Amino acid sequence: MTTSQDQSRETGIRSVNVRGVAVSISNQRGALLLVVPASFHGRRITIKGKAADPMTWRVCVYATVFEHKRNGKTQYIAVSPRLLPGNYYLDAGGHHGFDEFTIDRAYVSQMQWTY
Image (cartoon, rainbow, N blue to C red; front, side):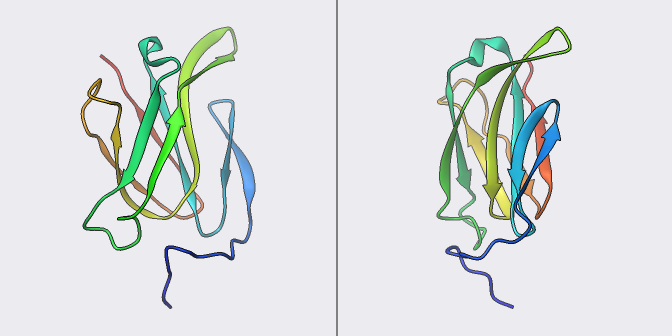
């Protein structure tokens, strides 16, 4: 089976609840939920596919950090739904290192940046 970057047929598209946030995934795509410090509120995080990964090398998407309140606590979160499975890295414009992560089909990957 060959999977292309322009895969147009997704099945099983659904929202799952992770840390009180609805995140969209499908049978063919996963997602990223990134928890960051309050100083990132409103910033844009760049999510890029790794050059060595044939599935993601052309992917470049953005996620904006938003405030989310749950059970009396405030979290700062960026969500990137329905990413192709593969290897990626994050860029916050020099405000944090280039962290690498992997997206699996039908799964929400979670990362937490702390200082």
